[in-house]
Image 1 (cartoon, rainbow, N blue to C red):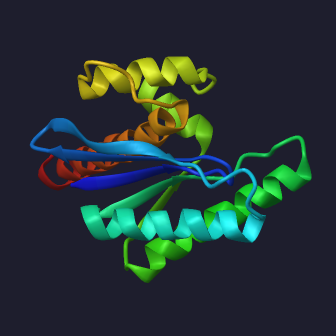
Image 2 (cartoon, rainbow, N blue to C red):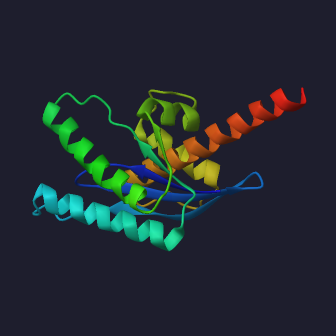
Length: 168
């Protein structure tokens, strides 16, 4: 199953594609969409949206796993993050890609075992879980890979539980 993980942001949106088949995890692609800082918010949202459409068209993920909005101290930051998520979710909807959403704490817990892990801990575990020779170029990309891994781990757990219920 190919998962496109997304760490949304209006200035930097991380993405990470992971294949999880036959009990093996494999990095497909990872990076960061960085609209120009001089662009207006609508133009930044357009850049993010178009980049996500291109990623979906190129890689054909089975699902898009997106980090949900956390409560920022600044209400405007939460609003802008929500708008970035809207551009991302629209790209998934236009390409008929199902969306799974995970809270930041849930992603950290799934990948590190600690819901309060810092970004560097998440990056370390992403490198270990995927067997990478070096970490992703940005923390946004490693966070996006963590979202994809969270989805794969949650789906594996659901299938395991369903299998035990059916055969047990």
